[in-house]
Length: 424
Image (tube, rainbow, N blue to C red; front, top):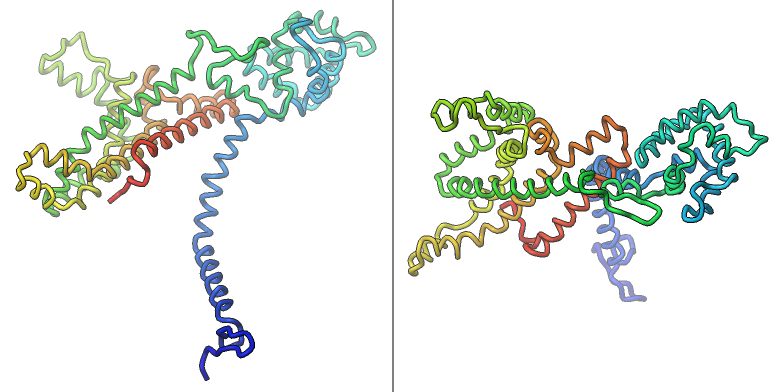
């Protein structure tokens, strides 16, 4: 009996079990797609848990302000009606709501957390909250509370304190981003901090231009090395490639520490220069704990990431193309620039985007050899995560860094085209 037969009533081709053949094919395709999805499901789950979820958590933390409205619930409701342009301090209703919230928060030991959170925006609030938390039980709630606050500490009469509480009375805030961009949210609007108080914009700019410089240096050094690897016989090329990959056999920390030994004032390089009398003994060069040390160490560490994409693309370029150009009368430079170099653009693009993205987020090397003038924004993010515990500001800085990388990626796609990026 045939596996297929024609239905006399509908004219459809039927399978052996009487199901229309088209339906049977769709079921088979659906089962195949399901099996393929099950195969990649563990990888997708791993990416979701370790990559996508942390990014969304970082983006949420950068605007999260749930602590203040939760602890100061009554204050957050009534302080919105206060207009700082009309009165320097809120009215009695706001002070009473704040006193009730602070009394409850003190019993739950939450007032110090709120004070620490608001202290990120206005210095002195943390100590003011702790001091008031110790005295709030002595307040007479049957009497007006505003004079009691002012009598206890005249800082409660400062407009900036109440403006800060008002600005952060919502569940979401842009305050972390203002701080990350060296902006200050005042009653008159958002203002840029004075130049001598800006720190994050300077770090972002330093991170950007140094990453671009490191990428350019890696390209300048990697291109001739990759070209040599591509034109040498396979045996010699493989041997040299082992030497290129040799640094990966050593930990990043050990390689960075080795540069500290080489670049320090009493290090190998300075000793050699003094021995050759290129520099005087009392005029040793400052090669470390500055931007120069960061650039040298990171260029060495990231160089293989530029060589490998270039080599893998150059290896696929037939040598006959250049020979044909030479046989048609082109000079050696013209044949290289007009024939060979354009075919390496995909490898150049892959190497540059890889090195730049790695460089812009580097932490260990700038921290160890960068000193005060060679650190990146990643060091400041680590400081807020590990030391100051200002995770919101750290998340905002990380989000801005992510946005910057995406903008560079978009510009690269517009100028070069991400479809041209290949690894051989």
